[in-house]
Image (tube, rainbow, N blue to C red; front, top):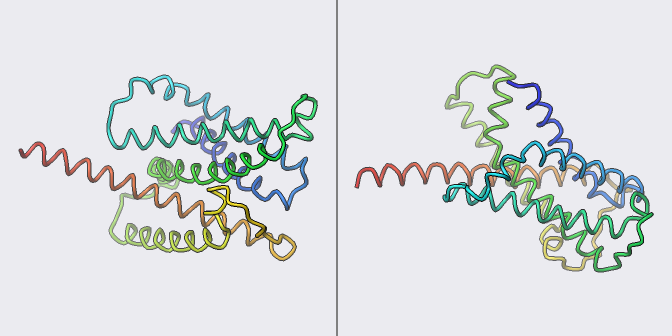
Length: 232
């Protein structure tokens, strides 16, 4: 396994972690928030540079349900991150304060909306690539071939994570955030900081699990269809 590939994985997970921390705006001061966001965008730029061949092959991508889901996911997260970046620059009071720009309330609303969609789409992106990530981890840890007990344990864990993710989605009011519905229900960081991050990690994991098993189902459905077509 290439050490370069491992470095890429570490950088990608670091970018996801920075996005999570940046959501805790009221826990940070504005300068820290902007510096964290800028670092995240630098890592995302490197991610897309590393994956430039995928973008170059996009016009020639073969049609299919699995490829469509991957393409839709990647384009959606790219568009969301672009909106997040533009509004970040427009609203900046520190990193890009030298620019003669002013975002106003609309830019702030779009920024918050894009931030939460980016969080959900990043979780989906992670889930769609989870099989590859686990394969890398399995080779690093020298894990043996799959067995029934381990598979059942993983599925039970995934189900528990999904339940926690749904609960945390309700607690954090994510549905309101994703439709830009006004809300005055902000997290009280003086009462609990750890709870904020645990809830968002649960949401991240829950969405990732849903995306992973949706991808597994698409592979299974595609295999069944090929076998059926061959039988006809």
